[in-house]
Amino acid sequence: MPQMAPISWLILFITFSLTFMLFNVMNYYAFIPPSPKSSITQTKVYKTLNWKW
Image (cartoon, rainbow, N blue to C red; front, side, top):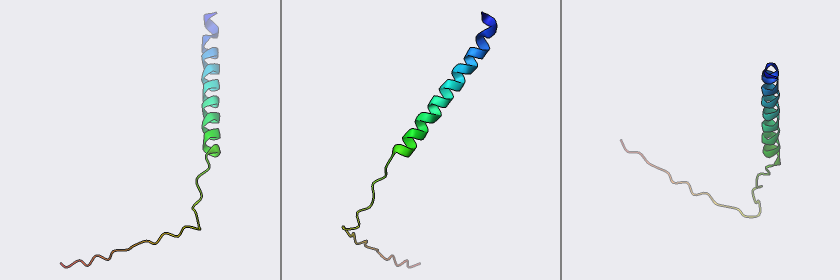
């Protein structure tokens, strides 16, 4: 029935959008960033730049 085509396209769009958003949210919250290691201390070397104008 061609009269029902817009409704099915709307349902497909809503289903795809919800699946896409659910997939992105799950991937966002599943990522665990690496924690910095406190036992290894890194010394930062700062070079001073003396500008002579």
